[in-house]
Image (tube, rainbow, N blue to C red; front, top):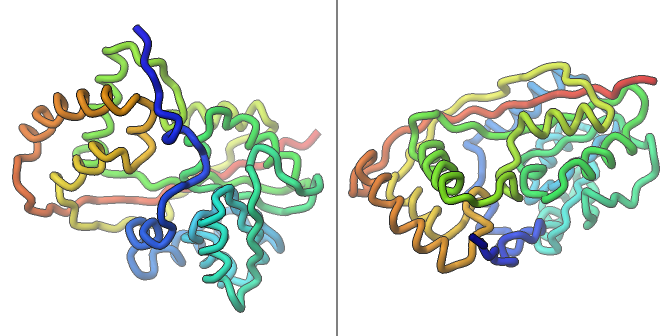
Length: 270
C-alpha cells in the first residue's frame, strides 16, 4: 500500500511564524539558563560554539549570556531573522545555512550543540559528519531534547500514533521519527563516543489533553508529519476516540512533568 506524503511537512526549514514558535515553545523562566549551566558544568566551557538548528534561540541566547561566543545556524529565513533581533548586544552571530552542508572551516569550533533538530532530517548522519568536521581536537557535541512523562498526554499520544503507523505499514524511520538511540549510533559512526547523559532540568506545566490532540490533528509537531492530508485526517479521527477514552473529552488542564536531557559526545581521537 502506498502512503503519499505531503511535501510541506518534510521540509527541514521551519515555515511557520517564529514569534508564535518562540511563545509556544518557551521554557519556564530560568529553565533555559539552568539547562545551559548544567551543560557547561558537564562538558566544559568552550570559547566558541555552534548551535545547529538554533531556531529562536532558546539555547543559543542563554549560552551567549554566559559569555560563550555562539554561531547560531538555522535554515529558516524567518527563524534566523527573529534570532538576530534578539541577539543584539550578545556575542552571538546568526548564519542561515543547512546543517548538512556547513560553510565553515574544519576544526574551527570547540563545541557543537543541537536541540530538537536531528530527528527532523531525512539524513541526520550528514549533519553529524559535518559537526565532526568542524570540531577541533578535544571538542564536544551535545544533543539535547525535552522528554515528557510516559503517562502524560503528549508522550501517550505519540506512542498511540506511532503504533498505528507501524500496524498500517507506514515506513519508519522517516523524518520526525528517528529515535535518539539511532542518532547515538549515527554519532558513533561519524567519529564520536558518548560520554554522558545529563538531566539538566525538571519542571511541570499545565497541559490540556484536548489541546494536545488538536496539535496532532493540525500536524503542529514532527511526529505527525509525513502522511498525506486525507490519510492524516482519517487516522486522527479514529485514534481520537482511543485517546479520549484515556484522558477524557473535556478541557480540564492537568500537570505534566517534563525534563531536559543532554547527551554529550566527545570526538574520537585518531
